[in-house]
Image (cartoon, rainbow, N blue to C red):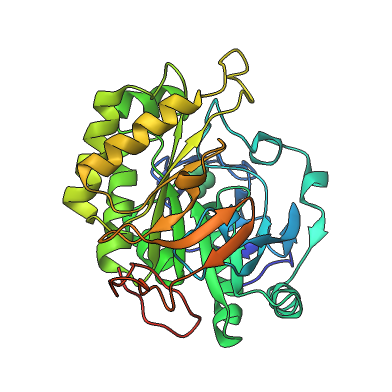
Length: 351
Ligand code: SF4
């Protein structure tokens, strides 16, 4: 199955009946049709020997120990550390990408930190991490390697966490998220034309399917991030529609993080998102009935704390990366209401 150390065979593809011997990758909805030796849109999947291979196994663009809150995950093992790593490439092409140095690079030098699954697991254990986060770039495109790491992590008692845009086809979606214990998935806008114009051909309905799948058909804890960009997706009626959909389809207990945009990549002319826009979005989400609404990239203490949805008692306070937990196993010390989430390494998923 393995052809070289950095190349892994993959499963989601088929051969085209054409004289050019093209192979179609079916991991994500792009369905790249690749002639021998050609790379897909995501860059790290390639047609080799009549099949699609992952070309970035056992290699990373960087490894770091992060607070889990940085992913962001606020109701999954709060105040623990996770070993984070990523590769290069992406299957979306967002004009506002905040990690474009690695998602858009075509320089193999950016993928120069070697790490096998057992090395990553050993590093996570020695840094006293609760789990391993597949992050920095889109982990779905490295699926085969991520699954190898997740398998070893599970054996070692470590959790697996995906930070993803959720742009994946149905069958690999099940496989990928069944190996994850938690995910933060970007819901970049609730407007299909935004996905078409600003994400390089993404598709809102695919992301919606991923969110539904993770919430209702997996054992993976789900949080959602919505990055608000002035003039592009800050329309309050669309934000209202998005929040109403979350409550109706995913329920009130899925945490929603509104994050402020900073000028980056191809949107350097756009100003940063004003704090009042993020706060207005937070109010909309709370009014819609979402119980746990957070703010990111602005200074707003209430927006980083977790409150009991029943009596509003603070359960977890966060200042920067400093975290104070007042709720034993997520139970409100005042009214004893259970907060949704996972609060200890051995507790059952409450979602
Ligand atoms: S995963 Fe990569 S190669 Fe496969 S269809 Fe998507 S962009 Fe193309």
